[in-house]
Length: 107
Image (cartoon, rainbow, N blue to C red; front, side, top):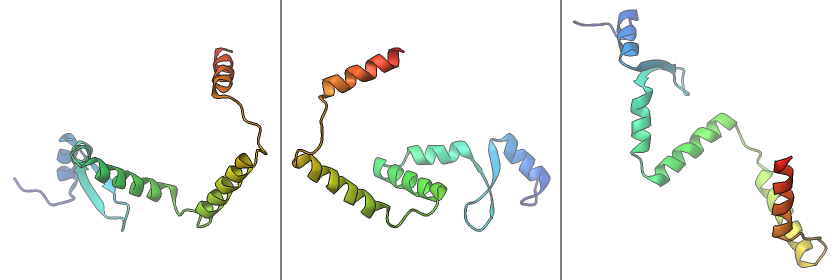
């Protein structure tokens, strides 16, 4: 039996076999591929490759980043560090912080 690629009958059979019809991220091309197959491939990747893929997907979903964000956060961290080193900040012992959190969680 032969099916025309993209025909309704061929797609129905693929869906029954666990395939889904999805629009790809780039170019709007139609892809038919089992999600479970993609998951298996991802799980077989080395940890660094999985992390790289995750970062790429998150960047795609989050959209373009703020070009100044890294610089602004670095400036803030350096300012806070300088204030701490100069004794300008009131610190709270970790034991006290955790106790406050425990009390709030019980409420």
